[in-house]
Each structure stands twice: as C-alpha cells, then as structure tokens.
Image (cartoon, rainbow, N blue to C red; front, side, top):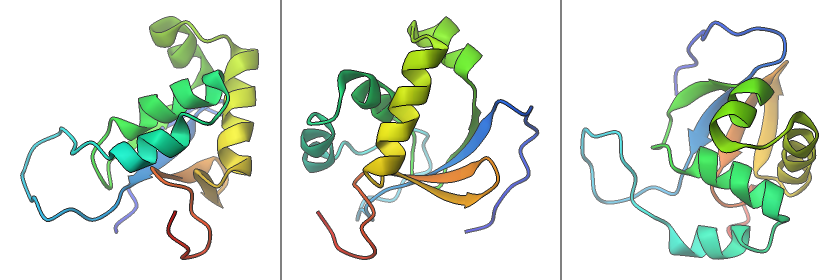
Length: 116
C-alpha cells in the first residue's frame, strides 16, 4: 500500500482504512458491510462506536484526514468525546499508530495477526 501525503494541520490525524479482503472487486467508493466487525464494535463505548462507524464506512485502503472540529460539526461529537473515542479505539487495537499523527484503522481489532 502506498502512503499518500495528505495535507493536514496539527490537530488532524491521517487515517488509512484496512478491511478484511473480499472476493468482490469493484471500482466504487462504497463498502461491503462486515456484520461480524460491527457486532464486535457494538460492544465499545457509544462514543467509540460512533467514531468507529465514521471510519468503517470507507472502502479498504482509503486515506483521509480527520479532525475534532470536523467531527463536531458533522457528527455533533465534542472534542472531549472525540478524544475519549480515539483513546478507546487505540486501546482496543482498532487504531494503530504508524507515524506521528498517522494511524491505520482496522475494521476488526488488530491483535498481531490474530483474527477476531
């Protein structure tokens, strides 16, 4: 996977979405829904589940910049809730840091090759 240099400001994170491989290959921006991944994510705190859903709706290998102000404006989640949600996703291995302010989002927790 080739990392793109997406312009960001200091409060933004660059997110790269990683999903389970699917047999359906289409050139389209929409996703195949992973019900097992969603079932696991539903066990998260409500704030973390909301942020998980925002990231999970993107297709595999999609890259985007994410900021607390965008999340607040678009999804009515304040900065405090956003930061707690990010921490929960990091602690539960949905977000894995790969560089300063760069993370890979896994639709299912990444436990070092163990598939949940």
